[in-house]
Image (cartoon, rainbow, N blue to C red; front, side, top):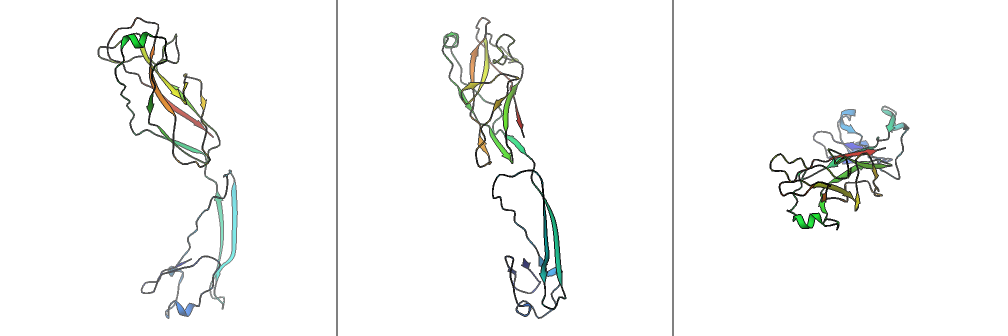
Length: 210
């Protein structure tokens, strides 16, 4: 309860409380001088549904000249996730053709992507984009100027290669605040002959949640 009458000292109380009216103001106190502030406290995992809260005689004066009753319906927040990408464009260093042609796994480069979830039980990540028909995990080189051949880009989640159309489960933290996704990208060799040039791939991230 907040008492904030013009010209008087502002006061706040946590319910339940009792305060002499004479100590607040010699003038008449009206409902315009009083404000209620409610703070929702999360005590555990939130579930969908409605909470009916009824507080009879929430506020009353001793002579019953003022009695306030209240009824509130509290609805749990629906599941929600949002992707935060500080730098949508990732620039990779050049790679030597000999290194690209080798059978060894190419060096992964981290991608800065954060996920912010609220009241979410399950979530998964999927990737979309123009990919190589023979090696679906490799996204095509779509560089408009002087494109290299025989090379594309792969994206990894927690060191596992992502494939379009194959969602991968996201392990959600206990405290559902913003957290970094363990994503990375790397060069990948296709079945075409390797030639020098520029490399560019476009990958869309999709988050499914409930």
